[in-house]
Length: 211
Image (cartoon, rainbow, N blue to C red):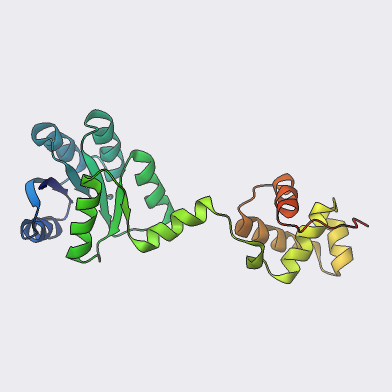
């Protein structure tokens, strides 16, 4: 089934190149292109495409805001982000806005075709690097990701020890204790000592003898 597509990018060369590439793909019909988010929303209103290939960093209305408006006002139109940027802030902002796919601009044309076909079917499509990032947010790292010293610090936190007590027990400075705590918080995805204690018990890291 042919997917009707709108291309959105503020760089003329990139936009025209994408239109040319997509025009050569089977089962894809480019029905328009836009240079910013405002134009994109207006074009979607006029053409009601199946898929919008959306850049993120654009003048007037950026890709995240445009995606949010399109998904709210025209829910039958899916959005695939195609951006130079793949940092956490960009990826998660796009997903929260309603994007169903995310690719970087070094993706081959075959990946573009696959993404468009996938979201047109109603599924989501993310390139491998984005998939890994999404998995990491829902599946905290295992205790194996902690260093032996970070594990020691976590055990002592679970035993109710203060930073001063941990420093004395491990013969390290309080500054080093804070560094280990920040690292293990980042690796385990916990936000405070209470969550760290819960994490320790869940993974069998709580000391059997708190003394």
